[in-house]
Image (tube, rainbow, N blue to C red):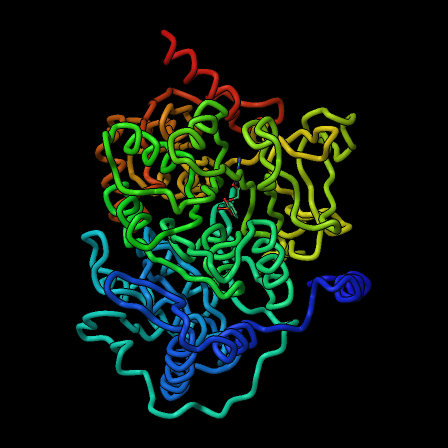
Length: 529
Ligand code: OOB
């Protein structure tokens, strides 16, 4: 949490207003109860209905024992019930822990155990996977299912007829836990307060020009920070606009939805934006996209060639977004010149976002030079949840978060992302911590040592390559065998390595650590050869 002098300043500056998520929904549903808040296929939910459903669900969750401060792992795809669930939990003062639909037993089991969750709320079947099978991994948390519940508790049975009479959480408290992309063995959880998060939501909505007439299409998973708050679904609710949920992000789903619902703004990771662009370019006369004003692209670096295709192909403005679940979000502004929009990753939301760009010894680099980005500010966390040892490395003594991103700052204050200094793979916006995958690889009987590095990829930006040293006397493992092994351990599919290279020994650094730099260089040599 922030030291008192910072908290005081953020309140005095008007960033932290004391508003809670419950206040947000209440004020909007009081102001315009009949306006549509959420569109999910045939279903249309008004602000008044959303508020009513959230309160009645808060009653049911309370009945089965969910209390203020409890953690509840929420894994829901883009469906209307997601909003009932999160606002019910906010009303109770219970903390959603936002898992992604792609997570499997390894991740869900860890989130439930690490947070000592009392409940796991998921869906029935999504993208061919039966999420109810994750209940075993989630135990002892009670499993609640949106859709056909099987042997579990059906979410639909928890909407009480009366509202519960409950105390209200205060805005300075932690509202939920987000996931970090991470670079360590176990995923880290990010505690966000009502005060800090809602500041980023309000400011983002303003920067992105959201109004009551805005229609925000959620194509990426709603629980990701980008889709949730940059300005995302919460920004749309704040502005009194409309959220349209896409169950899948593919062009065949998204493009007709933009036309039918008159979507004004949506967000994509670079490979998805490319897919949409190619689909539109290939159509002689496609769906009417004339309502679309802004396409936001972020989560991974957008190449300037693809960036330049957005306006001519889609007839809308591009906005680059460089953000992180830990806090700091940078945007190009809607009225920035093309040069800025095509070639930079934007500038921070807040005048009080502090930016430091440093070398390996934490010394500031000369102006305009590339270095590691450190940041501190009114919506950037000061520490991960239950991770005291890691926090000493991930934050400076004076509270700056070490993003692990290598950036340079231009004279005009805009940031350009140049690379990364963290052991993470950014696979088309999906973050993979090298160490987490390595730890799983090391459990295979034929693996003596493992190192996972990024390989450049034309479509995803990066893919993963696992380097493996076989155990003496064993046949070297094959890629299919290793993939099957990680799959059986319940690892999310996006973390499972795309390639394998078997080596007799790893190159080491001066202090004897495995040199990922040399492994990456060896891969480049192999690709050229
Ligand atoms: C967003 O959040 P996370 O937490 O999944 O990932 C954060 C990391 C950053 O540290 C950076 O390494 C990378 O993702 N990243 C970008 C980028 N946007 C994020 N790298 C290059 N260019 C960009 N535009 O990814 C996220 C959170 C809120 C809004 C948007 C993205």
